[in-house]
Length: 186
Image (cartoon, rainbow, N blue to C red; front, side):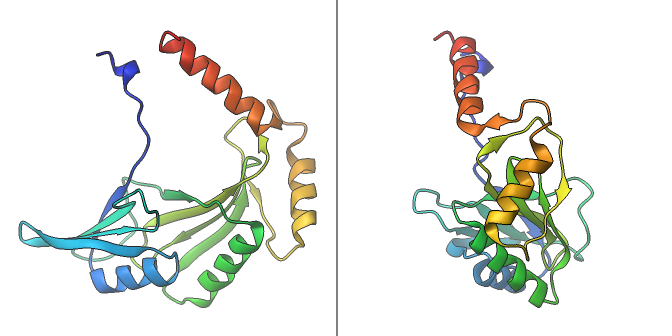
């Protein structure tokens, strides 16, 4: 089997944590995850969390981190939401109200509306919803989530419409599917 025959998708992240109870509370209360399993792994504990029925876990925590500090090997973990701009706005407000959260930054890439932040142990997190467009990346512009939704949509379109490859996301997905099908031999 060649490596091109493997169809991979990111399934989960595993983070070393210092205060597992604080991290469980944050990911449960702020992001809506539930603990699906937990138990010993060597001298440490592992805790699995998910919010999707067909994923045993999307993120897991392994105890044993000495002190919380910004990761030097992982920039951030991103979570796609099927939610709406209103859901993203509500999360943004909850994040701003939590003193354990830092570096909150709403951003649009043209193809996504995102909120970036650091969790209580300074791990980078992104929560995003898709826009209806594809835009060649990298891109990033400030996102004002205090604006009405229709204005956010219009200003995003206006800000990225002249960028290379701007277009309907479904056309991009179709091109990617054709490319991958050809690469895999049909």
